[in-house]
Amino acid sequence: MQALFQTILYQPIFNVFVGLYNLIPDVGITIFILTVVIKMALFPMTNKSIKAQKDMQDLQPKMEKVKQDHKGDQQRIAQETMKLYKEHKVNPLGSCLPLLIQLPIFIALYYVLRDGLANQHFDLLYSFVTNPGEISPMTLGLFDLSHRSVILAVLAAGAQFWQSKRMMTKKPPKNAGAGAKDEKMSTMMSQQMTYFMPFITLVIGIQFPGGLTLYWFLSTLLMAIQQEIIFRKKGPDDGKGIIEGEVVK
Image (cartoon, rainbow, N blue to C red):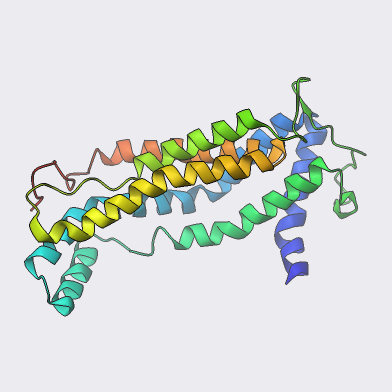
């Protein structure tokens, strides 16, 4: 399994990283270009994942209305919920599967940047990729990306907060009655994650070398921008949202 991971993911990405560095011998700019390249390659999957998250968020008011109308009848709630999914063409797993597919790529990138900054594994370069001998961790002649960076960790946490904030579940309407209890719990959990994930990003980012934190920041920022563009195209709630104090029918 490890050999397969190295051959299919790690080695190709490592060679792209070194190849870019050979063309532009600045590791910060190289990481930026590599991040953009990876994001472009994963664009269809991330686009699908973000749209699925937005669709689920927009459908939440109607799902809570179903729970309210059929309280205590779990079978009917399940049937009506599946009917909503079908009517609105929403796949509840649509936001999870693309992320699971991307996970091995993110892990490979972690090792690529770690080893590249440590000048390791040049023996895995393809014959047509020049061995640079070493990769300087300095970027723009000012910042050493082999060292930890609190500033980059804070920026990564900020980007994470922005992304999470936009996906936060809306407050349930005031007149939703007992059917809003589950949504209130969902909203509370969503709010907790909105602040918890940036905190985790900050803590982990401070531990990473600056190059890894830079990738994390750029990757999250690009994801947040992509998410913002999709949300604006779909409209504030795409006609299915909640206006506080009212139940969407």
